[in-house]
Image 1: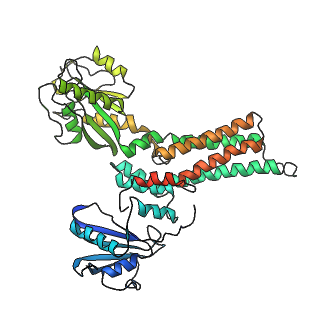
Image 2: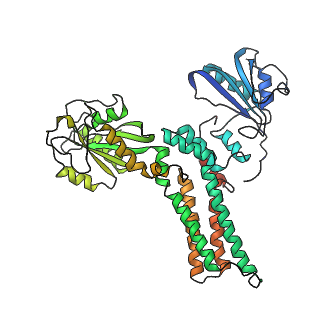
Image 3: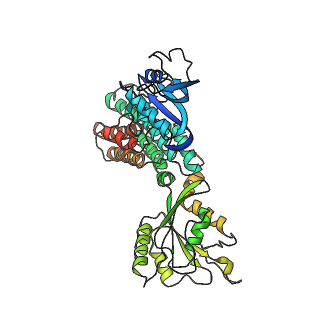
Amino acid sequence: MEGPRPLVDTIVAQATPPGVGAVAMIRLSGPRAAAVAGALMGCGGDAMAGWAPRQGHLRVLRDPRCGETLDRALVTLFPGPASYTGEDVVEISTHGGHAIPATLVEACVALGARPASPGEFTQRAYLNGKLDLTQAEAVADLVAARAPKARTVALHQLERGLGDRIAELRGQVIGLSALLVQHIDFPDEDEAPVPLGRIAEEAAGVARQIDLLLATAPAGELLREGAVTVLAGRPNSGKSSLFNALVGTERAIVTEEPGTTRDAIEAVISVGGFPFRLVDTAGLRSGAGRVERLGIEVAHRYLEGADLVLYCKEAGSTMAGRDAEFVESLSTPVVVVRTKWDLAERNEVAGGGHVPVSVKTGEGLGQLREALRDLVFRDVVENRDEVPVVTRRRQAGLLREAAAEIKAFGEALASGIPAEVASAHLKSAESALEEILGVIAPDEVLDRVFSDFCIGK
């Protein structure tokens, strides 16, 4: 990774969510962070010179523009480079709410600090060598985690779980290049160079390791965003009741009148620690009125983008005709849920692969949750952190590029292309792996990565 870049300005932002709360935290980073904080305390620029690092000090803060007392706050100094950003950082913990934090940020700006852009604190940490780019992405994933397993994967990545694996693969590619150089430059040495066939075999092994990482990418992306799970079926088939039962609260209106649901209702739930974006949709039928038809159109749009479909079919009816045709027409994985199972005849059988559920008694809900988790996240469940999880399209795309270049290298050697020419594929693979880590990273890549962050992080 490149060394620290000179960053001459000092930035400020509220690091906690704005709004009513017990505590808010204002963060300053940059060469004048201590001077700005000192001015708020009514002292000179060296007011914090004797402070012990990372120890809170209770101080009265005043608006330098008018001398008005703003708050009594806990002020903590984190001298660089032993700080989150690698620069001098000051964190000011105040009472929460809207007025105090906003006024403090305004006062810091009046003293010469600049309002921070989204993700700028973490971007400075990356630019100053405190984090690689996978760790920076993990910070955003951790903040946005919607379920415990998403949090666990983000923490593992923040602790360089993925970064170390990518660095290891990069080292192996560099090692292959070194063997190839030895073969090219020293063919007549007493100690014979490694045969090209052996180098090709080792390259194939590296490509297989990358493919193993790539296999985690589909589930990793869903861990970040939540698996879109659409409840579909005919009107009055128990979709909304099932939605409410899975969410754990009355979000959707439930009546005996068919066609009650006219629009899609969404909720994020955690199933076995994994995030699902549950969507209740309008019942699918012909002959509906204009408003209901609009709801059905919305349902079809959600179905097109779904990761999983729960098709609801009530007890006492058969999965035949249009129901069966509809399920078979879907390219998305489908779980057929036999709803209202408490009303089923004693000898009724749910059917192969179907999950019988009674919202009234709770029967089958646990089995359904387990089916959801295993169908979407089985690879992550079975992984048990043995292989780091790839969570970003950026990471996956560059891994595919690296794997393709390494495979192209092997094919080039096999077809008799000179080793000097084939070596370009290894260099391209190395560059792709370096871009994942941020060893090299175009500005537009950095802009995309850090634009996902909230202000103050």
